[in-house]
Each structure stands twice: as structure tokens, then as C-alpha cells.
Image (cartoon, rainbow, N blue to C red; front, side, top):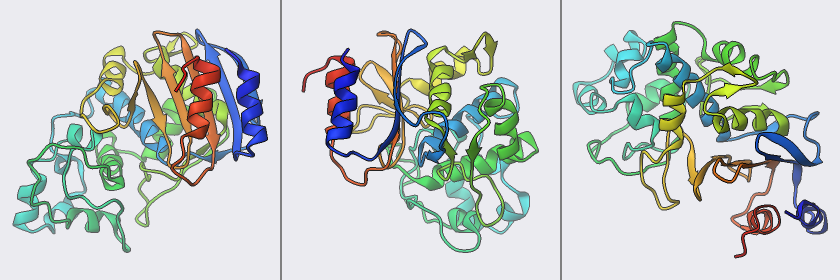
Length: 289
């Protein structure tokens, strides 16, 4: 491993990377930049946090992955749906939303009621279980989880995930109707994201305390739905022989349990380049392009 070369690439290329951490066999061995002070946008890494909250509810028997999402949504909202919409949504389980396998959902919800917007989406191909990345899928999971646990999801995440991981610096967002927005809008430190990654790396245990069942972690980090990137679990991406937590503008936590390596970085790079990833793979993982 040549971590110094990776850090030099970041500096020399002026890549907008806030901080980096590398863990080997669960221990922090290298760091660069601001990893503990500033909190930065996670974008879609927020979805993985939501997946963990779903896992806790699943472990406690509060939520059934095979149940229809409508079973957990506010009854007054479901009652206003047309017969056609109810029929379409009757085929959408929590598992399908977690795996982004609902066709025709738009990428984002709009308007004053994101829930009304989401439940009014036409789904002519609802039975086709192919990959369709949509923030609405995560949003609906968050609202459904609210119904399943009978309390605010944001507070649930604070108490059941963030506090046990020792994460005290964070922000998260809500939709116009007040539901936790599980698709994005969360902020953490680099170290905070690493702790989420360590929870998955250690199969649901952090510093000797079990937070998630090994069963759920195995499902969430395994390929549940194929896509062009190589596979998708429950709001978690396949990466080589491991998996990753991914955000929109290169917010990443790469977890390789077999190699005993985890790499986390938070950045804001609004392009489709792979330069940062390729430098990390070459200098940290020892993988040549």
C-alpha cells in the first residue's frame, strides 16, 4: 500500500476531497484531510443508513420485507389512491423498493406532498423486476418504516444507529410533510461514514455490541438485483468481491472483507471521471487499471 501516493494525487490534482480513512482488519491505519471535524453531504449514502434502520425493524419483527409497501403507509393516503394505482402498488414489496427493482418510478418526487406524488406515479410495467434507480424508492421505504415502527425514523436512527456507533455530528433532512428523507440530505464526518462501514464489515457488530443481525447484513450486502454496475443489495452496491456505500458526487466507503480493507472518503466532484477511484485502487488496493 502506498497511501502517501494517493494523498499526493489528491493534492497535486486539486481534487475536492475533504478527508480519507483507510482501515486494515478493522483498525484505522491511514488518514488524510478532515476526517473528524466537518460534516459533509452524503447524498445517496443516506440510503444505506436507511437500510440499516430497516434491518433493525426487520430483526425485531416490526417489518416484513415481503409485505406490500401500502401495508405500512398512512391509511388516509392509501384511501385516496385510485383503483388502478392500488392494483399497481399491490405488487410492490419493501424488498423491491430496497433493491430498486420497480420500473417507471421517476427519479425524484415533486410538489407539496411527495407521498401523494409518489403514489400517483403511473406504473405500466410494475411486474418487471429490473433495476431502476429512483430516490422515490428510498423515500417510500422511509415513510413505510415510519408506519412499521410507529415513530419518527430520524429519531429512531439517532437512537438505534448513530448513538451506538458514537456518531455525534450529523444532520439529516425531511420531506415537506415531515418524514425522514431516506434518499439523501444526510451529513456526516468521514469518520462517521467509516463507522457505518465498520458495522457492515463486522456483520452487524460495532465494538462488541450487536446492532444489526448477521442475517440482515448478509442480505443487504449481497447481490439481490443485477445491474450494469455488477449488482445491488438493499441500498448497497456490489464492489469487486466486496461492496460499497455510494453517494452522488464521489462520497464512498469501499468495504472488502476478504482483503480486510475498508476505504472511506467524502468529496464533492461533479463529474463522471474515475481518476480518484483509479488512484485509490492503484495506490491503496494495489490494483492496476
